[in-house]
Amino acid sequence: MKRILVIKLGALGDFVLAMGPFAAIRAHHPGAHITLLTTPAFAAMGEACGYFDTIWRHGRPAKSDLAGLWRLYRSLRGGQFERVYDLQTSSRSSFYRNFMRQAEWSGVAAGCSHPHANPQRNFMHTLDRQAEQLAMAGIARTPPADLSWARVNLGRFNLPAAGKYILMVPGGSAHRPEKRWPARRYGELAALLSEHGWLTIILGAGAERDLADEIEALCPSAVSFVDRTSFMEIIALARGARWAIGNDTGPMHLIAAAGCPSLVLFSGASEPALCAPRGADVTILRRDPLAALAISEVATHLNFL
Image 1 (spheres, rainbow, N blue to C red):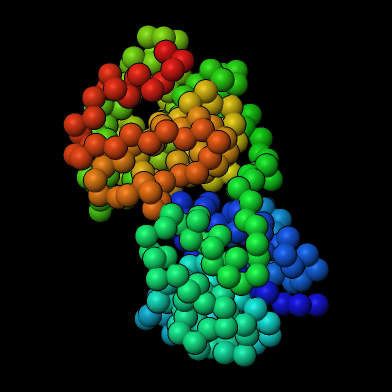
Image 2 (cartoon, helix red, strand yellow; image 1 turned 90 degrees about the horizontal axis):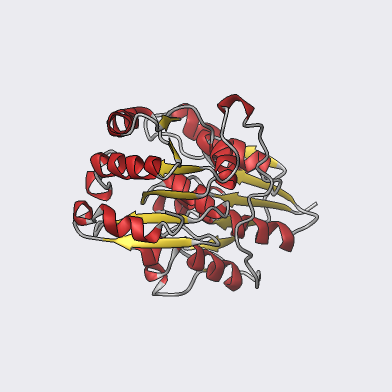
């Protein structure tokens, strides 16, 4: 049985954008034993999607974690892989080729057998770049992401009927505050939605609870699901939502890929042509600074109001 390794360590948005490439690799190697090298945050999705036979969660040990580095070295060295698809294409993942030079390698590692030999690759959208990388390795077609495998019971959330709520994702990278539309604006938008009979559900994690508190103060009918949802539950919530609005952040990739109409807000700090969520119904609004984006302009794109 042919043994294949796929490397995808994160982050969330990039992992979601790799779902189509994951499916393409599985379709190209239907009888192979395929291992995903990833990190603990994405192991559950890797298992649930059905594209992999084995999940390795130890793909990113800290440089100071000598035991973790030794474990990873032994895994890669002893994996007997015939081909590696490095979809991370970072300096870290490229370095892993030193542990397994006998394998064919698709990526950007120096001297690899199937390089993504496009000098403009860094100016391509992540998904388009990965599709072209796979094409250069002999996989001609990369399908859109299909998240139909994510099936979970949402009964514990006591949701309104499907299509009667809006998802709101006001957070994002803590060290990139310029990528966030102000929580006050989200709160005012939630209040406007409430006036039209829509329930707003706020998604996020960790310190984003403060953003949810600010939104709820302006719109008491809004409901915070911060720290209450898994990635697969977010996908399921997206299937029942009428619309979603959020910043350039990982959960919006899940929501958009699930097919939910999505309005994604970008500042000048990131380039949607390179990293925007992909899905059946995605609208991008961009302002620099993002705080200059008016609620009235956002509302005009929510065509159900």
